[in-house]
Amino acid sequence: MMDIEIQTDMIQLDQFLKLAGAVSSGGEVRALLAEGMILRNNVPETARRRKLVPGDVITINSSDAYRVVRLQQCRSQS
Image (cartoon, rainbow, N blue to C red):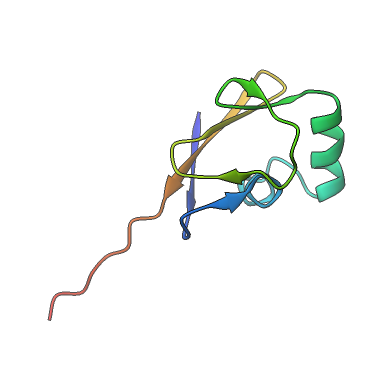
C-alpha cells in the first residue's frame, strides 16, 4: 500500500487518483468506476467526485492500494 499525502482536509476521488499517478484523466476514472474496479475502504465506489479523507484506502483492480494521508505541516518555532 502506498501512502499519498494531501495538503487539505479532503480530496475528490478523481483528483486523488491523478495525484497518486494511478490514472491520467477523469475519463479513465469514470471507466474504472463503471467497471466496478475501484474500492473505497473495501466497498465498491460509484462516485467520481466522492470526498476522501485521511485514512481512506482506495484499491484499484484488486491490486494497487493507496491510503489518503494528511501532510504534516512543520511549525516554525519563534
